[in-house]
Image 1 (cartoon, one colour):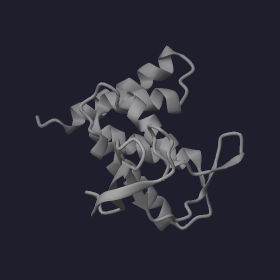
Image 2: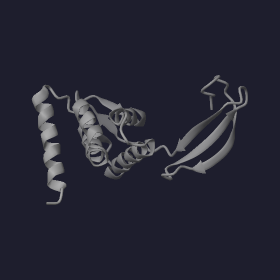
Image 3: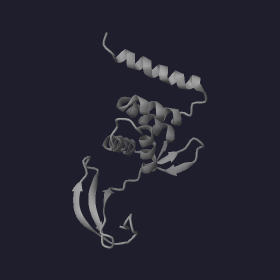
Image 4: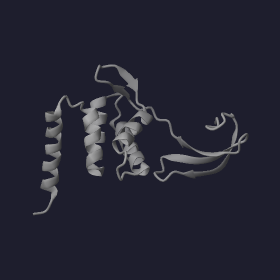
Length: 157
């Protein structure tokens, strides 16, 4: 493993343990050159489906891209990194169980929005505004109104 600080190609593993969600092994490493420590995660590599983009192009599923999009929506919100990782792990589990070789980006986006709606409504609106590419304020207001109606219907009378 290449040191993220100095680029030296050798390190030693100081500690290994199963991550909280039990989907990875967390390894604490120390660079043999600069002695700085860093953490890596080892996950089982399971081929997830190709993602069919809006333009019908196909790309490999990219966990980091999905996680970054969710993290951006949750910026300055009371959503922990653990919650974001759990959401991504859940999405990947659903994709594996689906068993398809290809999945539309719309399926992924809708799954993320449903999870964010339950997690943090502001993050949900942020994600939806980018994902759905609202063309004008009316589309945005329509989405907000739907959220407000959903919130009010959940409250006891």
